[in-house]
Figure 1 (cartoon, rainbow, N blue to C red):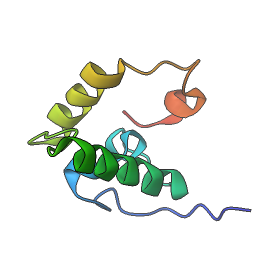
Figure 2: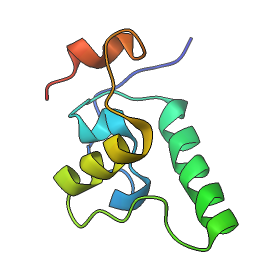
Figure 3: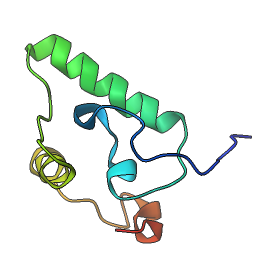
Figure 4: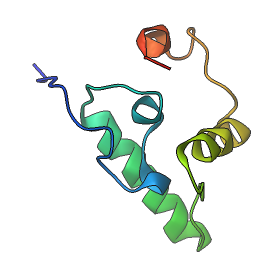
Length: 83
């Protein structure tokens, strides 16, 4: 079983921060590491950061532009997040 503990939302650099943390989740698991690793791989392949938001709102906007906005069908936990 994965232990889910209330943790800080400032866990990683903004450009590599996963959407669930940007949406205010206080619990997270290895999926956050996977998101960050994916961002790093994309940066290594392209030579530029995947998302270069200057603040959290801009970062979320960049994610939506790249991936489209989430919905509860593709992300069932979305409705439980604070934002």
